Length: 250
Image (cartoon, rainbow, N blue to C red):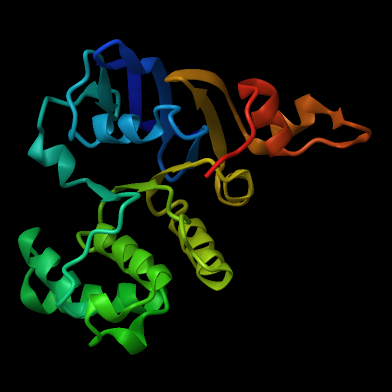
């Protein structure tokens, strides 16, 4: 693995009597696509919110290039692009207007924001809908637009929370290809409970449950260690179920 760019060290977050993130530690290398896997309620989204500064940890810290990130650091936030699980759009703005507006909010000049927005729309298959209001797009197109919005300021670190949720098969393939295209150019953290998605896009995966890290390795290494399951080669889903004891659930 290359030098660590993003990491968490002893991260803890509690909500009353519930410990959502429980002494979590991992590091992500430069240009790596890192999968954070787990069933719903495993603490994935809370971990993302802690990394992005949307929540304050009860213990532990977030590190950037080996150094602790100060609380509410604007400089660090500018390096991160977050695509949340929930679709967040301005319904009556067009696709290009959304991106141009966000670009201006990040301090990008109008010409550069337009150029960058058009490039992202093209990469995500939305060029023909650049002048369509967001409310008229299908759910899959809206999610792809949200992904473009997370990248408008050309962040060093891209954080994607369940990026394939609700996508049709065509959109799912396009998003997977786009995530893989980010490899080596950016550091990418993807949360998911879709094992097929993780096996296809992630260089390494961490499986968590009830806020704790259960295992961390490449998908191939985890599958190889599992060997066979019921007289057939194991899959990443078999590894997941063996560790968490729970079926995948939406």
